[in-house]
Image (cartoon, rainbow, N blue to C red):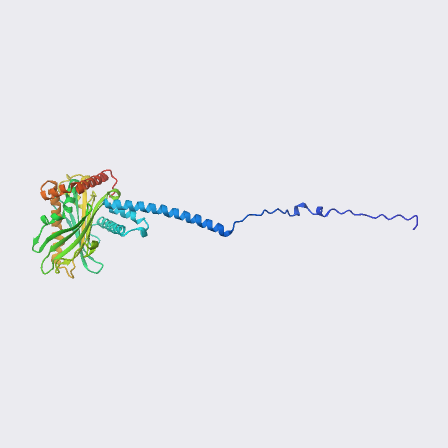
Amino acid sequence: RSFNSKPRVREVVMEEPKDRREDDSDVPVVEEKKEETKLPEASVDNDDKEDKKKEDDEEEEVEEEIDADLLMKAEALFDDDKLLEAGRILKIIDQSKLEPKHLTMMRKAKKGEALIDDLKSDFGGQNGWVIHGVSKGAFPTLTGHRLEKGDDGSLQVKARCETPIDKSLLSPFISVLNETELYETWLPSWTVPKFRVKKVQKLSQRGRCSQVIIVTLEVPWPIASRQVVLCADGFDDIKDKGDIGICLNSLDTGDEDGLVPPPEEKSIVRIDVNGGFLIRKCPKDHPALVDRKEEDNGNSNEESDKLLITFAASMDPKMRLLPQSFLNFLVKVAFGICWGMLLKIARDVKNGKRPDHEQAIERKRDSLYNWVDSRIKELLSFIQIGTLSI
C-alpha cells in the first residue's frame, strides 16, 4: 500500500429502532379482557319461569277476587229487582265462571233490554203499524196493531198502547197489575162474540215483583179454549235510564224446573204471548197530550206531572187462519176496553173505592208496597232534577 493513498472511511448508517419506525397511531391497542362469570343457562331460565308463574298466579288471584266481588254485586242487584244493571255487570265477567243462575239472570236482562228498545221505538204509521188514533175520555190513549210472522212462519198479532197518566196514579196502577188473584173481579167479558177470562191461577211469587201465572180464556166456538202461562219479571232501571219495566214471557210445560204443569184439559190449547210494560217520563209532544190540550184549551196539567205507560204484547193464537172479524174484535174492541178498565180500577184504588185491593195492599205493605212507593219517589226525583233526556 502506498503511503500517499487516502485511507478509506467506512460509513455507518444508524437504523432507528423498529418500534419507532411506524406512527404510534397505527399500532393497535390491545385491551385486557376480563373474564365474566356466567350462570348456567338452565338455572336462569328456571328462575325466569318461576317469577313469571308467580306473577301470573298473583294476577289470576286478583282477577278471581274481582270477579267474585262482581258476582256478589250482580246477585244483590238482581235480588233488588235491578235486573238490567245486574246483566250489565255479568257481561264483563269471564263467562266460564258463571253458574246456571247467572246465565238465567243474563237471559232475563237481555229480554228486558229488548223490551225497552221495542217500547221506545217509533210508534207511528211506519213499520207496519195500523194506528187506531187517540181514544177520548178520562185516559186518552194512542193504540195500534200490526201482523207479524213468527220464526216458525206462524201468524202473530201485536197490539200496543200508550197512555200519559198523573204521577199519583202510578202506585195504584202497579198494585192492580200485581194483584193477579183479583183479575177475575174486574176484567170485562163478552157474550157476542164469546170472550172472557175464565180463570187466573198464580203458580209462584218470586221476590217482590216477579210471578208466574196461568190465564185461561174462553173464545168463540168452534175455537178451542186458549191458555197462556206467563212469567212476569218486574225491574227497576231508574238509576241509569229512568225506567220501570215489567217483562212478560210465555212458558211451556216443564219450564221453571218443572213448575209449569200441562193443561188440565186436553182440549185446551196453549198459546204464546210476549211483551210487557214500560213506565217513564212522558214526552212533551206525545199525541195523547196534544189532543188533551186541544180539548181543554191548554188547561191540562203540566207535562212534568205526567208519566207515560206503554204496553205491548205479541200473541201467537196457534191458528192457521184467524177470522178477520175476530181479529178486529181483539185489537180494536177488547184490547182497548180491557186497558181502559185497568186504568179505571187504578183510579178507584187511588180514591178508596176498591176494598179488596186496599186490603191486599195493606197485607203486603211491608214486603212490597213500601218498596214500590220508594221506587216511584226515586223515579219522580230522577225526572225532576232534569237528568232524563227524551
